[in-house]
Image (tube, rainbow, N blue to C red):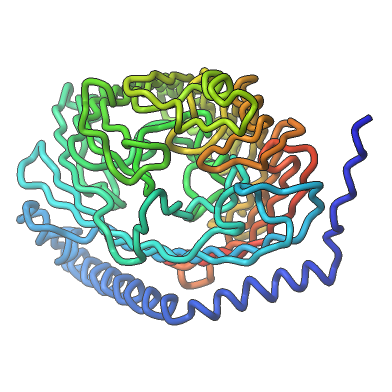
Length: 495
């Protein structure tokens, strides 16, 4: 008879106060970075405010509504311009929890506190009316709780796993790509300045091509209520479909081509990109005949002025690379601990599908529901994003208009991860993945609940603070471990 699982350690009032104390102490430890980022962003905000005041003065005199800053770039769009900058600190406290046993890749049951702080600067230019150029520099420091292993749904989306080499803590080139836009009609929309978005008119119906270094998650599996770890849910499984093993290096970027047809009613996108040489790898495989990723997505969205139509996205992908097969790795081990790396062969295939739905409800669409479903074959190893073969999530975002805080957001979501039979058998036999490995497994679905509140600081629209709570049952798909509680705080500054 299976031994009854020991009860988890209660999340008592003293432990809650201790978590709050530890997260705020972590924020103080990184105060130098916070002050520097705040100064830069405040200067940017002040610059924008001065420009806006100039625009009002010009408008009062009957002149053009553009301020001097916008007018300059309207005359010289080929000159690089700052499109945005951001700083995000996420501190998380993992409380101690009950565990019958642990392995090399287990989430630590002793508790842990860690913090990450990320910086980004985003620049763009438009040398031609139909051509845009974007270059982004980022820097990521800190670490995730428990060394960022032992969970399919890692708690902090800003965590960068180190892969096989030390990535360092300095600045790096995140994106560098070209965007070509071919108008297919006379209709135009107005695009606001944003990260990798040049302000100005944009064809409503168009052919759009992206070429260079970018993140597939910038374009596919988007959802207005669950899309950014820096402003919304922090768990990996709530800002992306975790069964989608999208091609990327350890930092989340790849090289390739993405082509999209965009219209008011629907959109279709198709991409071809590089795969890493090994699981969670930092180096791309140059053997493009045997290592590549094909992704396709169809988006159907409402037409008309109403903001309450349902948007549906259907995703499919195929990865080829030097991957192992779970069942073959078990057979090769002959009773010893299996190794998926020992079974890797070039040209192996992995495929999967995803469904993504967003349903606006109120507050001009700022209050709404979201849901995702995901499935992959579970035969070939999970290679890039995380170790999940099945995904189901459901959540809600509430705008703060009902309590006179219209810019604030409250989010609540549940998430369930599952494994294929072969993947579960591999872990039960003692195998290790790039994230999971308790050396034993009493299989159960990994179940996660997350809640956050994003508080926009009064009179500082560029600064928001978000407390966050996550509950994780069966961490790493193991009924013999958990449940775990993670309490966090996030500071986000942006221009």
